[in-house]
Length: 175
Image 1: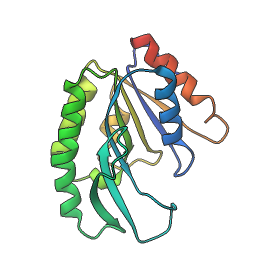
Image 2 (image 1 turned 135 degrees about the vertical axis):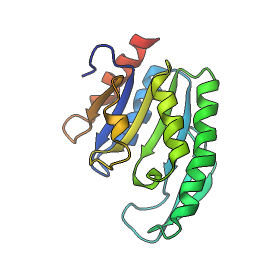
Image 3 (image 1 turned 45 degrees about the horizontal axis):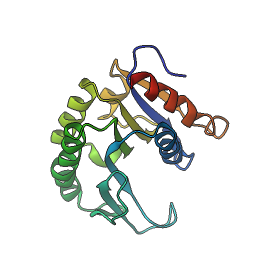
Image 4 (image 1 turned 60 degrees about the vertical axis):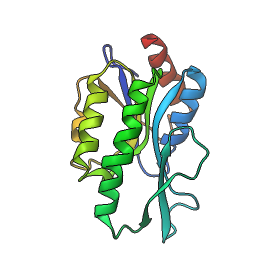
């Protein structure tokens, strides 16, 4: 599944297909130290309104409230990605982690230009990244999909059980 010379893996797919589940399973199989960030919404998917949080990847803490969905305060969301998101990516890069994780990259970050730059720095670095993002292009995130060191793996109902092993194998090659 992984192309030769690719050090980062982006799991794409439809909402609810299991990208985050495959990401967590791959990290558990790899046994390596993972740092980064997670955006998540507790509760049932698709039920509105709901809250969206950001926290360090692997944390059990609730994290920082990004927004109430549907989002009304885009400036707050952008500011949090440009501060907290950048800080979490910087900490992951400096930590010596085996992999930098972004569990859910999407439309909310579209105006967070400092966050985009921090993400570019990570992509240009040597530490492998594992990113979950929607299949559909979101404009701003095209630089991630098109980065020469990124391998895209589409998670589908048919392959989602095999994806963690493929990602784990790719991460082991880098170790």
